[in-house]
Image 1 (cartoon, one colour):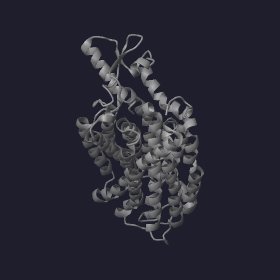
Image 2 (cartoon, one colour):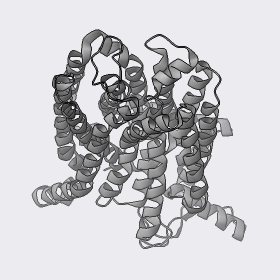
Image 3 (cartoon, helix red, strand yellow):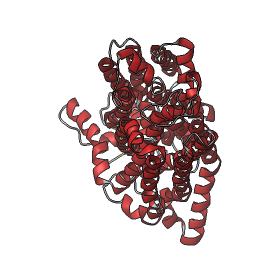
Amino acid sequence: MGATEPNSSITEGEDEAFLVSWDGPEDPQHPRNWSALKKWRNVLLISIQATLSPMASVILAVSAQAVADDFGLTDTYTPTLPTALFVLGFGLGPLYLAPLSELYGRRVIYLACFGMFTIFNICCAVSPNIAALTVFRLFAGMAGSAGPSIGGGTIGDMFSPEKRGRAQSFYSFGPTGGSAIGGVVGGFILRGTGNWRWLAWIMAIAAGVTSVVSIFCLHETYAPFLLRQKAAGLRKTTGDERYCSQSEKTATVPRSTFQVVLRTMARASKMLFTSPVCAAMSVYMAIIYGILYLHMVTLPLLFSSQSLYGLPSYHWPDELTGLSYLGAGLGSVAGALVSAVFLNRSFVSMKTRAISKHGETIAAARSPEYRMPFMQIGACVVPAGLLIFALTARPDVHWIAPLIGAAVFSTGMLMTYICVTTYMVDSFETYAASALAAVTVSRSVLGCIFAFIGNGLYKKLGYEWGTLLLTFICLVVTPMPTVFYYFGPRLRKIGGFSDGH
């Protein structure tokens, strides 16, 4: 995220180093002073990347039976491995991608990773066996995690806290709604082509086109990196080595490039275990995200053309099974729209009221917590959707009822996801990408586990009791936004990564 607000261009310190900064508060080079067109072009490109990766994560779930038939698989768990390992890769990638984006800038990470994402999807399309497919899916997930993991930091680079809610809502549809889109289109592609490999080929084509467009249209947004480039340019043109940026001046430089990379990779892990804010938000999003992927993997069971594992089914034709993801998809759209309309308004309203009641200094110190009331609403919606699904997921109830439950769940999930992402950016500013990486790795690991055990869970407990168990888990963590509203400022001081809100 952009580290500091624009101020003076060059200052001379006591050590005679020339500190390079922005050319005043209106410096057009600062990402927050860019034109709306330039900002939203960046938002659009990272949103496309953040949508295609989750699409790829689920697009093979709808063809799991086709993969099983192609490779001669007969057990419950192995056909889910390509999806589960992709989600695991989603979690492993941000551990090094997000901190490296703070070291080398966002743009190079986006371009390199999405190029690799394209290549690994091609490898998936030509995989000779389930082992190769699973390994390539793991690597594809790691490469594709750049968009979902550092996009929040990129938006924070370009928008102030009062204005970033709408952009965050637009972007956040991808990491969650993209999985539903993948489920919907996957069924039709499979039916039209008759071969699951075309699912990977189409993802590779879409990713390749996006990569090419990004080369020409995606701009660097990370303020400390831009200032380092500015200082390097001044050193080159003037020959004076005293020019440096704030991040260069305050950094403790390790002895080797390897140490630099290792240090930046370790930051996200350290934040996860030393910052209560990171830990709590990571646990919460892990639970919600895990349930989402369990839902995505098991929906084809409920709506499949034949009953599997002794579970009841609505017996939809194979080409229509993917439409069962529309409930989650429409819920994600609804959550994004509600957040786009009300998240900024809620934040500004809470902040204005706090200023009038406590003064500007105290209000500013609590600024990130003004996201929590909106998040609390979403947190209450999530278990309500799961309860509807649990009580209606059976053939004697019309199929629209469980899809409504899925839509309600997805609406609440996206509201909470957007609030968590924005809260982490508000709280950690400079290290926002690392903080979001900590959240991403936690949610992806649990998402992998849930995706892997989903079929087995419902086979043993059935749709009703299996989903009721998930509902109870969600109810346990539902009050967390209220807790953070009151204790967040104190908790953010622990760990030493907050930018001093």
